[in-house]
Length: 251
Image 1 (cartoon, rainbow, N blue to C red):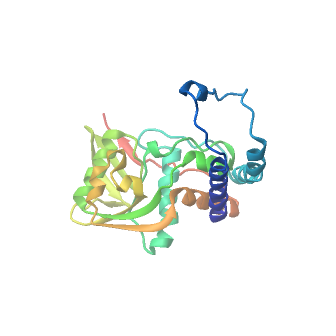
Image 2 (image 1 turned 30 degrees about the vertical axis):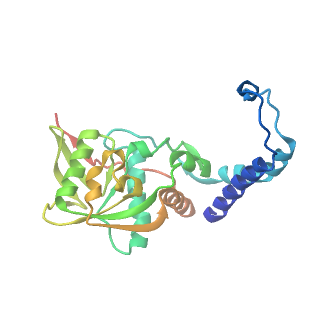
Image 3 (image 1 turned 180 degrees about the vertical axis):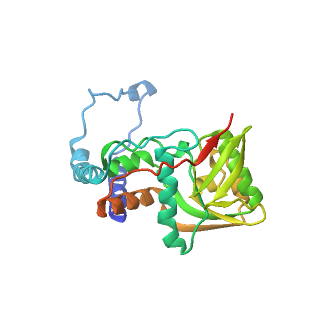
């Protein structure tokens, strides 16, 4: 589906570009004559419409494809949320088979998750709205001190869900950190799956640029989300989020 859909979009873009190039250029006598408002009164070019129409129909059909269902909407929230938990958990589920060994942690941010997943039917278009970026999953190897900086960042900013871990927020810092159920060890390294955007310091996660190693998985985050939802649907399962307490806030 994904390669075919990318080809459809590419062909559509090329068609638009070629159609624009086929129009002969002519100099305008003044800047004012080119000031044409773009609104409903501007009619479509019949020749261009004829070229675009088949691709528009195919894209619309593909975007309308139902890939899963959710009993309730998955929304964002501070520290942890249904949508944040769902994404960090699926990153681990989809990345580990490619990485071929367990991964310690998973990270996303609310800023990268553009819209909630709706209650009821979830379409391919919903996934593109949720994740419109061409972000690729990567696995970082991080020193213990970098991992502590990451948890302190999550504790302070409140918008960075972390998967496979629990921690307590006290005085703006992360304490009682447990990773995969075990106490955090500052003296060891940990692996983290996240997007290449965040790995490069996006959302001010500059500590991730100090990774000991960065390994690309060749999988877009959007594709990982689609795969997870399709796999749930194939197993007859709804799209839901694990809601166990991950972050404890102390006054």
